[in-house]
Image 1: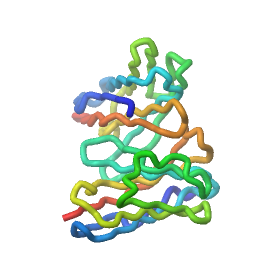
Image 2: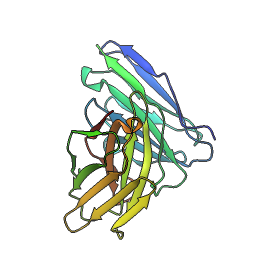
Image 3: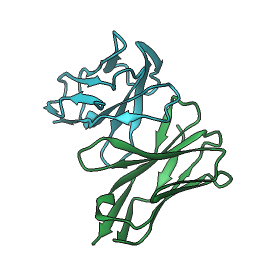
Image 4: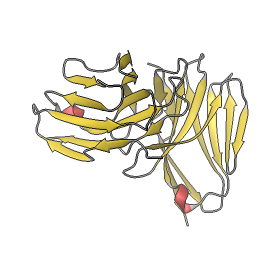
Length: 114
Length: 110
């Protein structure tokens, strides 16, 4: 079974630029999560989708971050405009159910904002 | 949000047991997890425990939960160099919002 795929693996941009990350979950997984992991910290949930609907986006900075999962499969997370403090690893995870006790993580996208 | 705390570093000799500790504040936690993260990789779920359990054993891994003290531990028996990684505990009460600790960096000395 293929795992969670993410691209790109690395991205370097200047502040005020835009960036987008892509995630393809494990086939058949209804629930998709985006996490932000700042160096030296644990992951922080940004947004959770159940199929193509948003379950929780309470910690998503909506003035600059947006995410979509239009067809209930793959998802895109966008930052516009980026700030220095957005430098982090962005992790995507998926699970078969919303219960969440079997989350599978992708390798992450390391973003550096200069 | 809820607080989940871990010590930052742990060093053990190969073949010894490792014990990684975690404390949390959410008294309504239903699931508690241990994840392993190797350099440049995502998180790998090692094991989880329901809040109505005290202990769970899975091969070299033993999870102990003290719900009264809100304390979770992960014991790795016969620690190997391949166990060197960062270990995160996490908890959820709703199955939606998950709270992760800061991670414990385990170094195994040959």
